[in-house]
Amino acid sequence: MADLLALLVALNPWWSGRDFDTGVRRDRYLSTIKKYCATGEIVVLSGVRRSGKTTLLYQAIRSLIHELGVDPRSILFVNCDEPALARLDRPLEAVLDAYRSNVWSGEGAWLIFDEIQTIAGWERWVKATYDRKQFRLVISGSSSYLLDAKGLDPDQREISGGPGYPLDFSDVSPLSRDRGRSRPDRHRRPEV
Image (tube, rainbow, N blue to C red):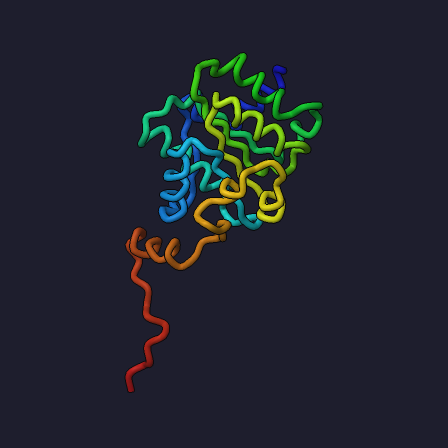
């Protein structure tokens, strides 16, 4: 239990007021995530590997804390790819028990599970946890696994009608302005 608690503390720096990296802000996706978080339904963020799902989860966590005033200890983030979780018999139950016993026993906790498809039987656990209405659930994972999830309502399988993708032009274009750099127009014909 001590090792599991140490892992959870490391994965959740906001519990102790430490800063955490949230990467390039992706307002279009983040606003959609925030809208779905307000519904009380399971929020499912799906996308290809390495598309920025974890970064979006961190941005959502920062928004919960700084914009909505959510107590940081009431937000549990778990990266289900962690090797230590694979060694546990019932990892999701063990994580929740350690969290509730040592960090937050109050109502309304946010449970955020990244790459949840790596945990066997996650679908049944998420559905049962949701049905108890004690927690707010946000899960992420690779598209193919989550879209085939058994037991989740089809409307809960992804946000914004489609999966998340890596940065696109609308995400990147503000970066050049934000950094104050001017970019030459590469598509302009040289004057003769």
